Length: 82
Image (cartoon, rainbow, N blue to C red; front, side, top):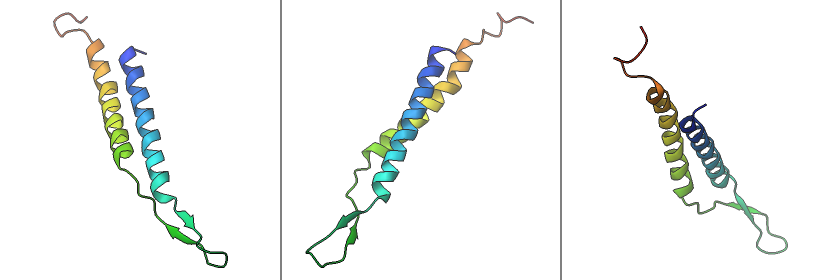
């Protein structure tokens, strides 16, 4: 594997991990108990969208690096073997 493909694959994995963490933070409610006899209530987190945005950008950038790494290694049309 070429170095560009490895970097692209690493960015794709990082993007998937960051998007997964964003989903977990967004979907997991916190339990709030107010008083000894009160029932627990679910309250949503205030989640910053920056982790998901960075994950999406790295996912797209990594995929673009993987696709373009193939083309860079191919010889020019006039120099290729026929």
